[in-house]
Length: 247
Picture 1 (cartoon, helix red, strand yellow):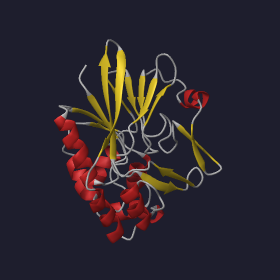
Picture 2 (cartoon, rainbow, N blue to C red):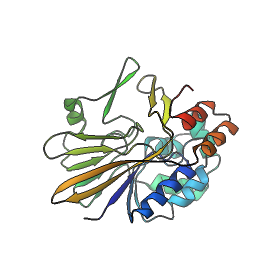
Picture 3 (tube, rainbow, N blue to C red):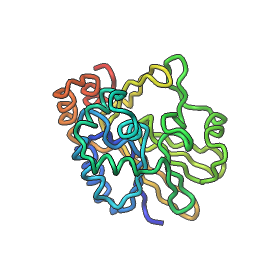
Picture 4 (cartoon, rainbow, N blue to C red):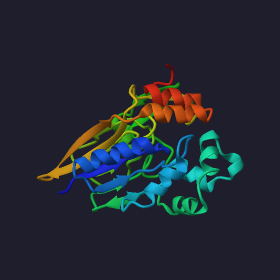
């Protein structure tokens, strides 16, 4: 089976996306699955969507995409507000038309959060402000009724490969565009990956067994950090520059 690249959580970071695409091309990968959260944030939403709309990839919507184009603008947070003001009507229509999940070659399910909720983490649980790896029973509960042998998810920007049972893998490729962030839902917490790299995953099947690589790509992250700073998002500036939320 050909190699498959899995991307998620670009968040308008065009230089990071370009670096990932260059790495994919160097490896000869042309099949790409993109798990959503494409444009929200203080970076390059219009330019990123222009690029994504030209690709023959399978692409779904994330929770930030849904909020960006389905919430009233006066309900937007700072990231959605910045992106909404800069993307075109055609780009908004493209985001509105994206499905919440998709299947690829029957055995692979694409979702952003869980298969039923785009803003709920599949592989992590937040309790008392702390993010921990979800227990296998929690993951299986969130996958209730799902038969796919591979489930791809994003949302938490944290690269993970979990063997749920003898027949099912769950893979989070990490975030292309945002290695650290703060979130208020389901309760205040911080996600940090500890480096500014752009992340994605590569899947390849050999003799009915899936091989998975979690890839970290260096890029001009200071350009992205400076863009966030210029747009008065110092939280993003620190996260993009360091992979942590405090320098």
